[in-house]
Each structure stands twice: as structure tokens, then as C-alpha cells.
Amino acid sequence: MAKPHSVDLSGFFTEATRVRDNSPLKSLTKYMEADSQLVSLGAGLPHPSTFPFAQIGARVAPAGASVTNTAPADMLNVYVTTLPGAVEGLGKFLQYGNGRGVPSYAAFTHEHTQRVHDPKYSDWDTVVSLGNTDAFVKALMLFCSSGDTLLVDEWTYPAIIGTVVPMNVQLAPIRMDGEGMVPEALDDVCASWTGERKLRMVYTIPTAQNPTGATMSIGRKRAIYAVAQKHNLVIIEDDPYYYLQFEPYVAPGGTERYTNLPGIKNLVPSLLSLDTDGRVIRLDSFSKVLAPGLRCGWVTAPKYITDKIQFHNETSIQQPAGVSQAIVASLMNDQWGHAGWERHLVQIQREYAMRRDVFVDLCLKHLNGLVEFTVPDAGMFLWFRVLLRPELQGQTGVMQRVFDSMVANHVLLVPGYMFSPKGTEQKVRDEPYIRAAFSFAATTDFEVAITRLAQALAPFC
Image (cartoon, rainbow, N blue to C red; front, side, top):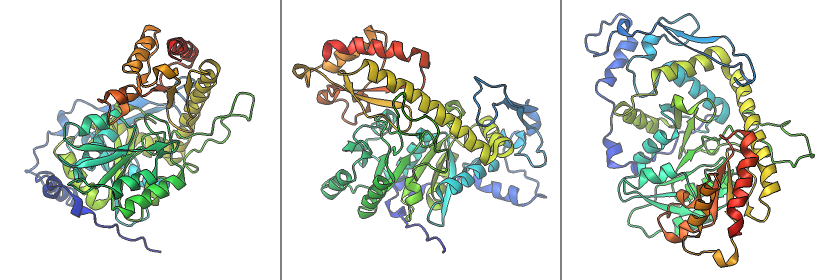
């Protein structure tokens, strides 16, 4: 059965988006690409012979292994000239390009999206980004400008708050539970909205939500999508932790751990995979699964939307750094392939599942009576509710004193108010929440950190 065409939501575009068009100079590259006999005297490009790089390479671990416990594999190399069956040469990667990215990099992200999410409408496409923060800015500016309001989780990623506040875009927080954004709460806010401007867009992190660690079930995603359809909202699906899903927590001595990691085939389906209208703008990134310093990601949406993001790229970032694209494209296309990529993701899932389990084991041992938390099934975070003594609950400045106590005990967690759209309000600053990340510290330091945390919290609980 043929897939339907996306619903046209371009009527919601901001004025800046409506007038944003292809860069005049970039628009000429199609003639160079289409005619191998054409001699271009138009492009102001530096000649590739002036690039002092004959070869760029990286020594990488075999797919499914870690560099810390295995001998590195053969070198991954990209040369000046294109070799048969390989990705483009350095003359292409290191040159100016359009906002879609180098073809071999862009093709992998497109093929991977097809294999994993199989979008349900016909005119979907992908476009490169510098990671999800960059992609969020581009997606937001499509539909929101000064004076508009963005619907968000009641606790959300601080960079989102830091992005929208200078733009004079307001935030409308939506109540959350253990699965993230509550669809009935989203519906209530939309149905009772009396603002001067119509609500157009909702932003959420559906997997391992930052900061709460909550992951939406497939049922929750269907319910959120239904509300978006009812109120004709565009959804920004920010999903950098999507591949960091793992098994539910099992207490020590129970069922053997790490025997049913999801890989790719058993991940919770994405909002994109449910989207029949083309109202989901999905943000993906290599930051959590390869390295954040690569600054490589991609956006999936209807082509009329990805075209606008391409045009925005061409007057801002151009595209991810050529060296980064060369490494990722060569790794994915020539060395690992899709099968090796999945083996790598399973290894990453195992690493973070192990970290989660060690951390939770120690929290249950040392923090009993001091905090409450829900064990996450994905990601990097635990969201603690500090069990303050009754006389301290809601007391002005109490959580600042808790934070000062943590620092004095040489352990650092993030105060909850930093994740609140209302974080400047004193009431929110005194909400008893703190976020712990089990992603970075050495596992051998976990017990030291958690015992210090217990000492810091004890006077308040």
C-alpha cells in the first residue's frame, strides 16, 4: 500500500521561515554536480591542491568492543582521491558544501532512519545538523518567534530554556509522571489556552528524559500523538538517548543481567514511526553513541521542512565539520556497516546498563530514607526527590543549603530548579529534586560519591 503524503503545516511557518530560501550561491552547485564536462568559473572555492591533508584516519575498536579493553582494529582512512567502493575523497569532505551534508554521510542517516523508524508518510527526508541543540534551534525557528509559546515537559533540558528565553518565546510546562509528559495534561493546557497566539509546537525528550530519566511507552507515545493531532501541534522529538535503552533493573542475585539488551530491533518505537501526518520533527545525534565532539547529527521531517532547515544551515553552520563527516561516513559505510553499527550499540547499551545497575545497587544500600527515585530503563540519569524533614519542606532556601552541603562533602549533583521553565521562582528553587548522572564518573568512585551524598543529605532528612 502506498504511503500517504504528509499534511501541509507550512501555514504555521513564521515570517522568517516563509522568506528563507536556498542560498543563491549554493543553488548553483546543482549544475556542477549534473554536468561532468562543465568548467566552473563561478564557484569561489579554494582549490583542493592547497589543502595540506593527504590522508585523515582514525584507529577504532572493532564493532561491539570497547577501546579500553581490546586492541584497536585496522585504521579507518579517507584519502585525497575517492577509492573504488569507498566514501568521497578529502577534496569533497574538506570543501564548502551545501546544507544537506556530504552525500555518503547523508545517505547513511537516511538509510538508517528508514531501517529503524520506517516513516509512515511518503515525502519524509533527512538533513544534517551539528547535534540536537543546533537542530532544536532550527526546528523551533520554523514555527516559533518572539511572543509565541512552546509546550514543554515540566522539567526539561536547560539548554532549551537558555535558547528560548532570549528569543522571547514563552514556555508552558506540562505535568509529568513516570513515563514523561502526561497526555491528559497536554490536552487540558491546549483546550483551555487563552493566549493571544495559537499554540503550534510541543517539545519532548521521550527516551531517558533529561533530567527525570523517564521513558515513554508505546502507549504513551500514541496518546501524546493523538493530542497533537487533536490540537494540530508540531512535535519536536528530541531523542539523543534513544539507543541507550536497556533491560529493567534486577536486584543483585536475581535474574542474570544484560541477557536481553534491545540492540536496534527491540527498541521502543519512536514517535516518528507512529507519525502518519508528518507533524513530528525528529532530532537524532551521534553524540551519545560515538562522541559529542564530532558534532554530527540529523533531522527527520517532511521534505518541505528539511528544505527550510537546509537553507538555514547554508547561512549558519553550512554543515558538520568535514573531518567529522569523513570519519563517521567511512566508519558507517566502509568499516562497520549497519550490522557493525548495531553490535556497537549493544556494547554501549551494556556499558550504561552496567553503570545504572552498580549505581542503583549503591543508592539502595546507602540512601534509604534520604531520597526516593524511579529506576530508569534507559539513559544516564537518576532523578532524586530528597525526603526533607516536614519542618524543612518548602522552607525558603532549603535546597540551596542542601546544595552547599553536597559541595562541602565533595560531591556534585544538579539542583532540580535548573531544569524548570519556572526556575527563577523561589518556590521552584525549593522543590526537593536533584539529578545524578551515572554516565561519567568511574564506577569505582560511585560508592565514595554516594556515601558522601548520604552524609550531605542526612542533616536535612
